[in-house]
Image 1 (cartoon, rainbow, N blue to C red):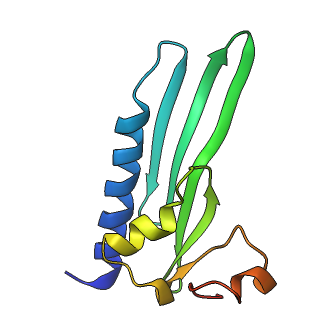
Image 2: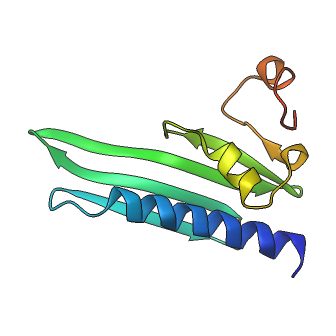
Length: 111
């Protein structure tokens, strides 16, 4: 399997695992959005809790120029290490939610 399809499959598997972990609530819907053409992958929550609107992107990952860009990571543990454990090397993962200066001091790709 080529690298791009492998990355797509890993990302989708990871997001499915998070969606399964979060489960479905009667008042909050978990949505997975997979755009393989544009290589955008999102896990979104939508609904109501205690009369408060819940809407937000928990995880947003893009594939840009052969690298996996984590644009949003609303998890406690962090998806970057999980992607590494699933087979994507650190030098191809960009922590897009961090500034370039902060990315330089991580073990992951700068861009």
